[in-house]
Amino acid sequence: MNYYYIETFGCQMNVHESEKIAGILSSRGLSATDNVNLADVIVFNTCCIRDTAEKKIEGNIGELKALKRASPEKILIVSGCMTQQKGRAEALKKRFPFIDIILGTANQYELGAELDKLCASPKRSKRVSVRFDDRPPIDESVPVTRTSYPNAWVNIMYGCNNFCTYCIVPYVRGRERSRDKEHIIAEIRTLLDSGYKEITLLGQNVDSYGSDIGNVTFYDLLKDIAKINAKFRLRFMTSHPKDLSEEVIKIIAETPNFCNNIHLPVQSGSDRILKAMNRKYTRKRYLELIETIRKYMPNCGITSDIMVGFPGETDEDFADTMSLTSSVRFQNAFTFVYSPRAGTPAAQMEQIPKEIKKERITALVALQNRISDEISADYLGKTEEILAEDAPEENVLVGRTDTGRLVRFAGDRSLIGSFINVKITKNKASALFGEIVNNG
Ligand code: SF4
Image (cartoon, rainbow, N blue to C red; front, side, top):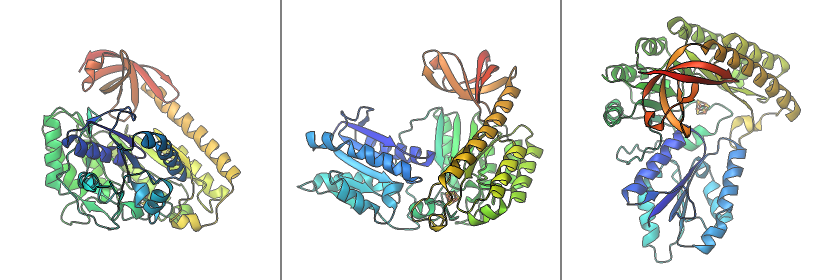
């Protein structure tokens, strides 16, 4: 076997897990290819956050049938959240009998061993290996092949305890398990020593880091990261408004390496809907948090997730979401329409009509776009330090401000990974454009 091909669906957590899958395959001597026809091992790392995501993945798996028929020696692996739902692995096996290995989220690190078992079985019998364990162990020895230089993703915890009523994550990712602080710090130091310039901490709810092991908190972790003597950027996702503390906000503000950028999903501006969502905070608590963030970081780039059309959402509830959006003025927001996710409590609640959801999302998107445009205009003429992250075209670079705004500017790809001073010269919708003023 020479090549592997990985297709990743879903969130940053999955992107990073695909880096671990790549690490396992690389450690067995395989190289990455982006040509599925060339690959000996094909992995679909799946997502089940929305029904549409699952349909798309099923479509993509179906498209491989002809390839598998022509080259039955190719190994097709389906892993990730979709396979971890009760009964889903068996259903996938029935519908797509040409899948060789089905692997859950809890034991993705066993991919190498599963490959060995498959190859050792005389008839290459198909394998389904999904464990329903709420607290699967954390394996610190999994190799990682990183794909996002100059950024490196670092898991600080896995799983979620919150059971928001619309969300499938706790059912497919198990309960919160935090990594040891020492392992995290060692991983960050190694990454910085090998040239990474940005570290993004990952967890479904980073603010509750350590609550499962005791004697350590997210603030403690940040305090230790703040002591690292190097120039880099630290970001993290995702914060939960019920748990984000003032001491965490303060240390972000005080530490030059920590980006003034907080993603704080609000989901709704209505207390009634927040309660039905089981979010465990109120509109008042959320607005107080925003006030605290702005007290310590007046220019903090605050972004959010906002949902419309949750079951039972009235015109009044939606008006509360609109008024909260207006008063907070998020730099950007991921706005979306609620869609029922089988297996979650909200899917059993009385749904509201599609046309109403459509009207509401149109109004919310228009409001947020206007706010994002106004905030973009405030950047005009300013010089920002940008970390050059990618070169989407010849002589074009993209990178982000400390506050998380994407900026596009002319420059050679050799500058990827450099901190560069860029003067913002143009804004178009929520995109910023600029030119290099000197190399920082
Ligand atoms: S905090 Fe809520 S929305 Fe986020 S992963 Fe956990 S259950 Fe899902």
